[in-house]
Amino acid sequence: TISDIRLPCQVSYMGDDARPIDIDCSKCIAVEESNNMKILDNEIKESRGSGIALRGEGSYDCLVENNYIHHNGFSGLAISFGAHDNLIQGNETSYNGIIWGGASGMTTWQSGDNNVFNANKCHHNQQTGEFWNDGNGLLIDGTSGRTIVTNNLFYENEGRGMGYLWDTADGHFFANNVLYRNGYREIFTFIIP
Image 1 (cartoon, rainbow, N blue to C red):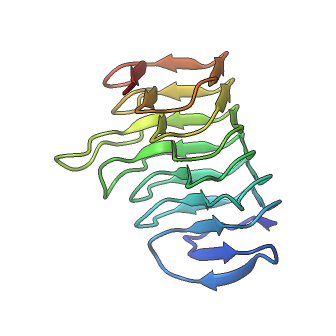
Image 2: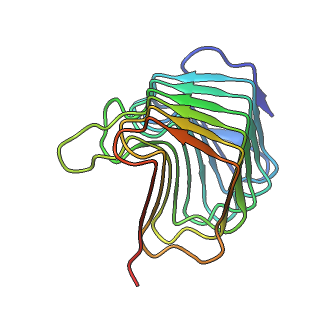
């Protein structure tokens, strides 16, 4: 369990024993090939990269709950490269994407199935850069598996409230989300057959 961190942090974990593997400032908390991790009640800020990253097929059954993730260079929270069956709940992401383009408050990229985003608040995430301009509340991207998005609040993001892009899997489920005053569109879909 990683909890009650209040300063900018740079800790990475890998493997079932969840031992620290590196410390740098390109990410705050990175869970790589680890399962059953709990990231609870933290303030995560000022990373050059993502605030929290869950990566790899071995990253599953993780709980990310009640974190305040803000002012990070890339996305506030990123799930990628096969990470699956994770619960992202009750977090607030804001003012992320302040250094790199292509960032969102929360994002999936080539993730596995059954990642759940529930009761999160995503606002004021930014578009940066000349080529990759996102700044979304949530972006499901790059052949991500089935994703469940319920009871979230997406507002005043520079990009979209929610985006669903590329060749993503069938069966995504969206319900009871509130989206308003987002810069580009509330919901955007673009699918490559």
